[in-house]
Length: 446
Image (cartoon, rainbow, N blue to C red; front, side, top):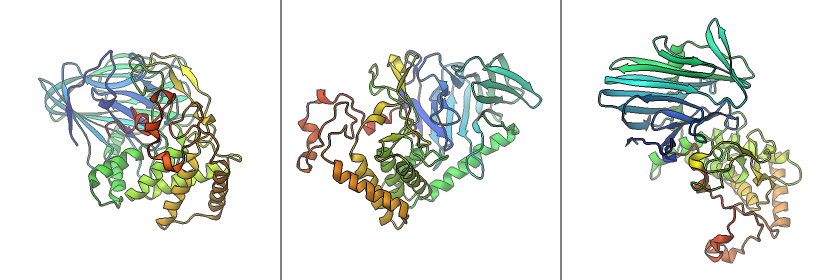
């Protein structure tokens, strides 16, 4: 679907619906409609942010923006998560094609954020700003024979670009440059990131070529989906969006790719959702199975079974993407999206009892088996144990699917259908619905 708009910032913040996502199975970047990547946690979704302009008007970003007023036309390539944005100014038009690249065998050992710029007509003067967050301390710069390296905390980074890019400012990790996109000309800019590992320095032409090979891999994946019912194109796009949240290192499914975004502007419910909720994982597994995906649901179900099996007598409701305990909640000292504070990381939902998780797990296992897949003996024993626990605990007060702070009894089946209408809204103290939780996540505008 083609989107056409004139992006405008309010207080230097874009509306959340003006972001699109790109991802590589490990991390997700949010690309603003004005060409500014304002959120990227590298190398993983739950790493500290390298770009955090979503939280801070002058925060980290990687932007490619016309120097004069413009409008855009933007779309994902068909059946792909490679994003294309056309900037239109009074002097011409230029296209930016961007991707978090993957290799022919899947995820690359490093993160490769690639942005191809092409002049389509006339000329467009562009300003490039690369300003990573430096919360871990000052960047350390080393001139390597093959690249200019910046060390930012534990990250090793390098900015790859054509020598013809006009560098205006180049200090520590901050770079400001200009390039004029003329009809028929093109260039590629890329930020490469590695964490406690060697950093490859590929040729810029190889980085550029991987944009198209990544596109082919996305289309190959989408082409394997077997759903052919109503709204098949829309369902394929939704499946591609959910694919962003599958953490390829472990098979875990993140609830969202963002942290600290508000449920309402100015509110204080600004939580960190870069973790794997049992409930959300179950819903996503079921959705992908019904769409006809196989690899991701099997990997996610395997992660779910292993994680629950290794975690004491009773399962938690949420885990890190590595299957560990979620860190304690803490407050990050940033202004927040449009002044919505506090901005939180970690999540205290880990301490809650949510009995609905038993039903989510067992229903997922049932669908998994009904679709002809095999549940191994260890998983079967775990599911039996969970069913027994459910029988023992179903009358216990819990926080429910809405993660209430005050534990309550789950309503009886007879009243469950109209329960939300029977309870005063003021009693819903910490309401976190699946719908509002996706705001600003990988599912935005995808």
